[in-house]
Length: 417
Ligand code: PHE
Image (tube, rainbow, N blue to C red; front, side, top):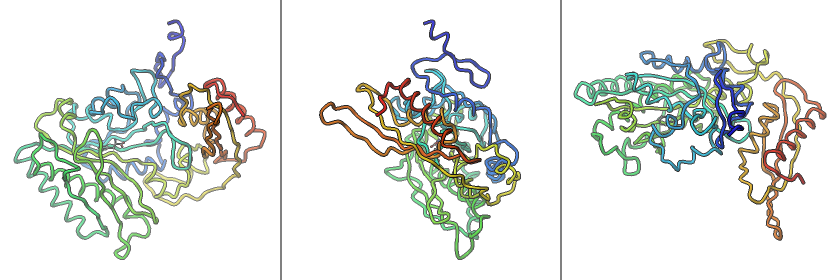
C-alpha cells in the first residue's frame, strides 16, 4: 500500500496514484500541454481552421483535457468489454480509472449532453504504436457531429440540406465512388426509421465530400481532367451504424482519411437527448497535413526548430522545404525474453521513445527465433536513429543505445545476447 502512495504521476498539474494499469511514460506526459492544433502558424492549426471554415455554423471546440475515464472513452460509446482498444498494450493508462483519450469520440456524449446539435471538436489523442515516419503515439483528430429532430421539420431540414450540398458537388472536380447508405452488412439501427437513417447517412456523405473538396481541391493538380477521387468504404465502429470510412486518392496513393457513421442511439440516450437522429465523423489531421504541406516525417510536427516553424503562417498551405536530412545510423539489439514475459512490441517501442525521444526514427523487428531445445524466445530489433535538426555523434547514439539496453533489462528482465 505504501508504494501506491509513493508512486504518483503528475499530468497537467494534477497528481494521480499509479496501479497495475499505469503505462503512461514521461516522454508522453511531457507532450500533453503542447496543443499543437491551436499553436498559431503550426500546420495542424491551419488545417484545423480550414476544416472549421467548412462548418461555419457549427460550434467549434479546441481545448479539452486528454485525461478521460475509460468509461468515457469506451463504455459510453458501447465498446464491448473485450474490445482490443481497451488493452494496456494499445492505450495509455494513468491508472485503472484514468487514461489518455484514444479518440475524440470520447467527447460525443459530453457535447450532446450540453445540447449541442452541430459541433466540431479538435484535440490531441494517444495510442501506443510502432515507430516509423507515419506513426507517432500522439496525433490529432477532429470530431464532427450533427443531429436532427426526428419529426417532419427535421426531415425537411435534412432534405433541404442534401439538396444544397448536392448542387455544390454537381459542378465540382470530384469523382465519388459510393456504396449503399444501408445494407445487410451495414445495417440501419433497429430503433431507426430506415428512410430517415438513409437521409442522415446521405447528409453525412455529402457534407464530407464537400469538406474533402475544400481541403484537397485547392491543392495543385486537381482539375477537370484530373479530378479529386474519393471512395466510401463500409466500416464497423461500436458507436455508429451504418458506418463508413473514406479514402482520398492523392499523389498516387489512397489515403485513409476518416471514420464516420449514423450515431448509435444509445450514445444520444446516455446524453439524455431525445427524439433526435444524426451523424458523426472523426478525422486524423497529421496524415492530411503530411500530404498537403509535403511534410515527410510525422516527428516534424513536434519540432521546435525555427527552420521548421518559420516556414509556416497561419491560414497558408505551402510546401515544406526540407532544410537538411541528417545522416541516420542504426543499432541492433538482440535479447532472450524471460519465459513468462508478456512484453509486447509496443512495450519495446515505449522504452525506445522514452529513452531516445524523437531521435528514434524507425524501429523494426528483424529476427524472431525460438530455441528448439530450451524453447526460449529471442528477438532482434533494429533501431534507426536520426535527428531532424542536427548530426548525431556515434558516442551519443551509443550512449542512448546503452540506456535502452539497461532499461530493457530493468523493466522486462531480458537477457541481452
Ligand atoms: N473515433 C473513430 C476512430 O478514431 C472515428 C469515428 C468517429 C468513427 C465518429 C465514427 C464516428 O477511429
